[in-house]
Length: 269
Image (cartoon, rainbow, N blue to C red):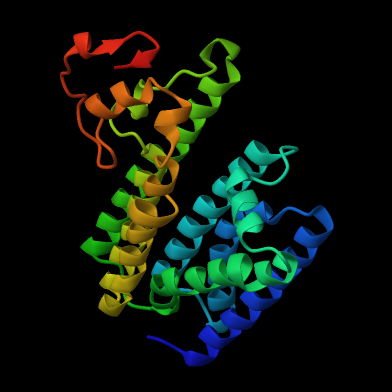
């Protein structure tokens, strides 16, 4: 099921939300607040869809609950992590490259772009929330994949936060726990969350929403996730070269055996 009126309402809601965020960013001189807004965009879209139906079925309540848990957790973590730090260095670089008039350009370059991504990636929610068909095995597979994703995403964030809170770890690389299985457990977790939501939509006939997890996977692997984070991290943390040698980049797996003689403690040959 796909109702254009509900999707149009979600577009209007996102436009209002990103416009508000943009105005706040002008007062703060900090566009990185869009990172906190990101997950809330999906929750807003899901709520708009839910309001559009007369009554939510089991799949509707399931999709709404899963996206709400994911969105609120991620919003809280990112807001806490970034609180008081000022504008993220990634956005500072974008600002410098797009002066003059970045204040206006950020409306469509930063906020508009992420709003558009959210509208596309959220497509499985359209089908799942508006479906009244009974749950099937694909729904349960989607729930299982979503749970795996949340374990990796929330667990990875928690382990990294604890690691960074210890002053003795400054300049070191976290290579234990979930971070021993993949260099990006949080991104892999996000990957699983959205493939899980797609399976729930697929159970309701939403095969065409495949663009959602594919786009999210592309963003995580090639654009704003792994590729961006690892672009210069080896220069900032020499130990990262050793970590790369023994740890899978994205999909989890056991640590690889490496020749320790290739490395000197604290630096890479």
